[in-house]
Length: 372
Ligand code: IPM
Ligand code: MN
Image (cartoon, rainbow, N blue to C red; front, side, top):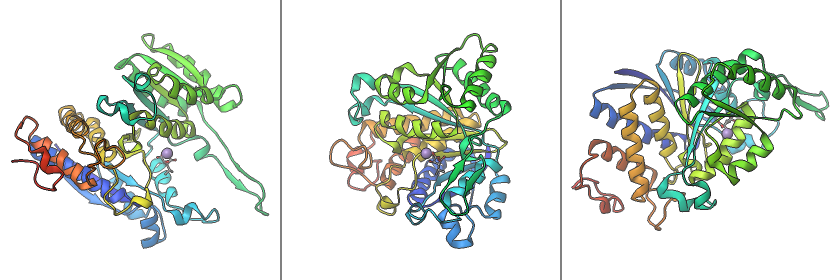
């Protein structure tokens, strides 16, 4: 298969984790005889510095003329600490999601057997957790009308949803549940918000089209607690934009590091694949960023094109790296953390040699080749 992939590394650790994802995609292309062509473009603070615009037209054109987008991360402290900034890196990502019609953001959360001890949560609570979060991505409070009074003392953000916006992501969530554990939990705040009551009504009606799937409801405050108390109760979580943003960061604690959580944003003709973590500016350039979320996002990209075996190979390699503790400091269990690039090197090598029992894992830590 030939794929044109727009690569938007962005800010902070974005470029270094994306580099590892590309390394891994290249290993896949060799092993499975595919052609991946990359088209790099600017986004975020880096794009503001170069062009004044967090999503230059050229970047949008590059995305629109590609088959998929591999996204790094965006954000920079100089904007975070300046509430008066009119142009912000995040606007680039939000505009891109909207322009590409990416209304569904899928965030898988699972507890890896080898990392059970890395989570601050008790092992018996998280063991076996496997959740797929379906976060609405182009509506709600993120995109509703914003207002700041002239004297700068009153502000508002409108949370607005239409039936159609709710239905289209709900269908995807129910279909996903059909091939999983057949349960959808709608997370909302229907005891307070009118928009949440619309979600309940629309999702309840639509559920009758999926008689094999059980639908239940949780208020978001309770859901935040249940995720920590008993994450195994969840299969597919369906929720609006901001609740999904918040609970997915919370859910990342289950896996042991936010550096493991990948995502796929779909809905339009071009999908976008990105780690859920931010740009971690303090870690940029130090080789300490975990590339696995970006690598698993690349696996989701392959999955999106039906390349299941290829995606499975990446998962197998990632699990091997975790098992052998070939990990960055956020996950390392033995005081022998390796760099971002070394994690990528191992995964790349394993993809090429999955059955090679002669791989010299000890050399990984010495910075030598993994293959004898
Ligand atoms: C995410 C991020 C973004 C969001 C930011 C960077 C705009 O936190 O993808 O979860 O809030 O959607
Ligand atoms: Mn977020």
